[in-house]
Structure formats: C-alpha cells, structure tokens
Image 1: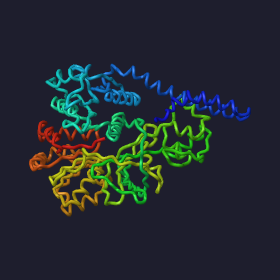
Image 2 (image 1 turned 120 degrees about the horizontal axis):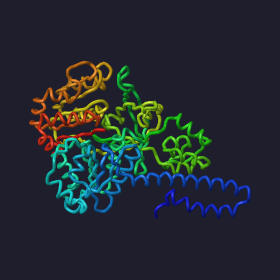
Image 3 (image 1 turned 120 degrees about the vertical axis):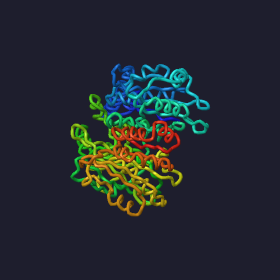
Image 4 (image 1 turned 90 degrees about the horizontal axis):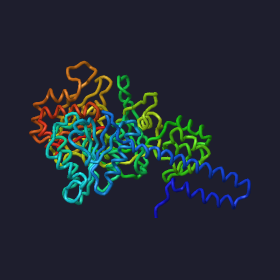
Length: 529
C-alpha cells in the first residue's frame, strides 16, 4: 500500500482537522486550529511552488539561439517523462530549453542547434521506438556535418536483451560520424536504474553551472566519518583543493573498484541553518526524525531545501517534524574516488567552488570547510562500470587535469597492486610549485616503474606546453605507438575545456574513425564533469 503524498495530506488534513477540533475543549481547539492552519498553508505553498514549475513546462519551447534541445524517443512514456524532468530542471536553473519528440526533429533543426540532450528508449531487439522510426529513416541514413553540436545521451534499455540500448548507441555513432562532440559518455539505464539516473542528474547540474537540482528520488546514504582533511595547494592561483579521507562505520565492508564514484549528501553551512531557525522562530535543539535517524531540528534542516521566496513564509508556524517531513533533501554531488578499499579509507580530491555572492558551493563547502573533524558524512558508492579498469594488462594512457587526478590516482593504485607497469600519465594543472597534487606518490611510481611515462603540464609556469591536449599533440608519435600496442585511453577531469580539447587532439592524432572504434571497444573512456 502506497503512502499518501504531502499534497494529498493537505485535503485529508482539512477533514481530519475538523473532527479533531470538535473533540477538543475551546483553548486546546484554538492551539490545534493554529497547527492545522499552518500545515494547510504550508502544503498550499508547496503545491503552488510545484504548480509554478509545472506551468513553466508550457514554455519549454524557447526560441533563443542558445536554447538546449531536449529530445526524446519513448515507447511507454518513461523516456518522455525523464525528458520532461530534464528540461524542467535545466529551465529551473535559468537555461533556455526546447523540448521536442524526435518525431519533430529534422536535419535543419539539428544543424542549427548548439547543444542537445537525447533521452531515448530501445524496443524489441534493438529497434527505435515507433515515434522515432521516421527520425531513424530520415537522419541516420545521412545528413550534413554537425561540428557545432555538443550533445549528451541517456539511453534506456533492458540488459536481458542482446542489443542493450542499441538505439541509443546507434544515435551516438551517427552523431559522432557527423562530427558532433559528446559532452560526456553515453549513460546506459538498465530497467530504470536509479544510480544511472542520478549520474545523469549530476551532469545536468554541471551543465547548468552547479545549480542545485533536487534528486528525483529520496536518497539512501550510508554513514561515514570525516577522518582527515588536508589543504593541498596553499598559495595557488586556483581555488583551494583538499585531500579528504572518510572512514566507514565500524565493521562496514569497503567495496568499490577504481573508477567508481562517491555520491555525497551535503549539508548547509551552520550559519545558514542558524539564520533559517531564527527566521522561523524555532529551537534547533528540538528532537526530530529525519531519513530514519533521530537528530536535532538543526541537524535535519541542514540537509533540506527550504522553500524559495515568496513561499518561505508558509513554513512559519509549522511543527518541526512536519517541516522536516515535507521539505526535499538537498541534491547529491558526485566525486571520483581517489583510493582503493585496501587503503582503509575512501579518499576524495575536492576543489572549493564559490558562488558570485561569495558563498561556498554546497557540497564542496561542506566537505572542505563546514564539516568538523569526525563529522558524519552521508555518502553512497555508485558503481561506474564505464570507467572500470581494463580486464587485462594492456598499456594504459591516463589523461586528466585538476581534481580529475583523483580518478586517475585510483587506477594507478590498482595497476601498481597488480604489477601492471606500462602506464603513461598526462596531467595538467596551474603551477608545479603549488599544484603538484600527490607529487610524492607520482615520483615514487616513476621510481619503481609503475609509471613508465609522466608528462606534467603547468599552464601558469610559462612553458611551451600549456595544457594536456598540447602534450598529447607534442607526443603524437608515442600516442600512436601505444595505441598500436593495444593501449586504452582513460580521461578524467573537467568537461569544460579539457575534455573537448583532449578529444580533438586524439582525433587529430589517431583519426576520428579510429577514435570512434576505440570507444566502441571500450578502449577510450571518459569520466568528466
């Protein structure tokens, strides 16, 4: 039996409240009436807030030249639902959006588009949905170049079929053959897998400049402890970066592979929670239950998204537990795991982000500044099969920048433990003096032969090579030789700038067809954000 939603609760409360008031004495009835009125007003505000968002869906047809196209191909309606959620989330983050069925998309529209997100299902034994069959006939057969288009694909399918997510992969191949540039690797969703959908949401947040996009499902985190935090780049021209070590609950098993991701449930800064409590005239020490745990009201509100203005006033007068129950949890943030289970802790490399008004980013602020030593960190591990290590001992070219070194470090740890020594790291940051993350480890791996080659590029040190893509071009002959020897190429780091630049450099060095074949065979993999 399903539980009623908060919105259904508003109408139920009107009936139940009337019965309750009839059974109470006059003074108690006045108090109860205040609670009933407050809760009904709050639910009304929540409904109004969501109605405003739903009403904006009618405007998901922006004529702006820079509008992001969200196109869907749906058989049962699930892909259409996800596309609508995608478009609404981007529009809520201030991005112009155009939502269309693939049946409405033609070559002219695509050629005029600069950024597109596709949410597509596969039916039967690898077919396009019926609504997209015309698109498949018209466009997959041929079209003009799409060099200006950047795109992402969410492919829905069922892995019990031989041609899993086949239409999504066919669309991806067609777009790349016509020179469109992937924003990130195709995301496969097996039977509505919630982890894959969260990964898609994380990309939406990144595309919208780090906007706080509420999770589409209630998160279920484990409990970890902040064991260590170390500032890695004092004096850097870049934002502060921190090495974070998290310890599991006593007796909890550590289970992940190189390439997997940590999804962190952040908290507001304590000062923000105090301001919220003061505005609501509530005692932060009031005991409540939140996500199955007993805690104080202050601790619970630190994990919740308050209603925006002008609906904020509706929260005033609401009993603390009801307030916690109805507010949405803060959205998660993803980080590449920088360690292996045998290290005993889950380690991250986190750079602080800062908003225009000076506030620290939600998750980076929590991990690097607001959480105290020993604090509970809400976290769950998400398997990222598309960035797992090669199944054999083939050579490995690792390319990245900034905090992308976290994911590459885990791969190097795994290669060192397995005695697999043909590894080449190309890594870019600002300054050798201040931004040499894990420099001692990298030097040790070079000394013991784990790193056969290491090309470190410092953009602010005045060298001829300023970025990792420049280093790839400078060593094009070696790149081709390693690939001829069977090497896989793994890229980890920033979506903006680095990922596209590296892709362009590799396409120049190896040829676009060869690079596409490497991707098809799992030898070109990316974890970018």
